[in-house]
Image: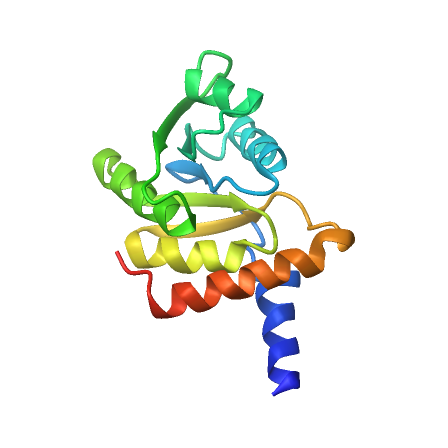
Length: 166
């Protein structure tokens, strides 16, 4: 049992599977959370590389400086869209992303979040969205925060496996 726990902890939260080579998509989607600034910076970097013409951000109402700039949209050479989530959690991010993707006829997205969050985020988005999903990690979780983040993600993963459905 301990071996399985260690295996899944490593596979899901420490060294998760991500897309090796990103290809252009209809939109770049950032799931906000603990390392939001780094996630947003990575998404902007990908948009500036031309990997999508739209950056979409489900918002939780915190409006950090960079989040506010993205939602204003005027500071960038690519389109930006923001929409509040309900509920304010990863499942809410996935549900609102699927709604916006359907409204805009997006066939593919690049999902940006942190390494410890990417597996659950992808799983939930895949349940809600029928298009292709590529994944990009914004930042590796700092070792000093790793234990706390893994515990949080295990709780979120168990909830997601058994309850969150679109």
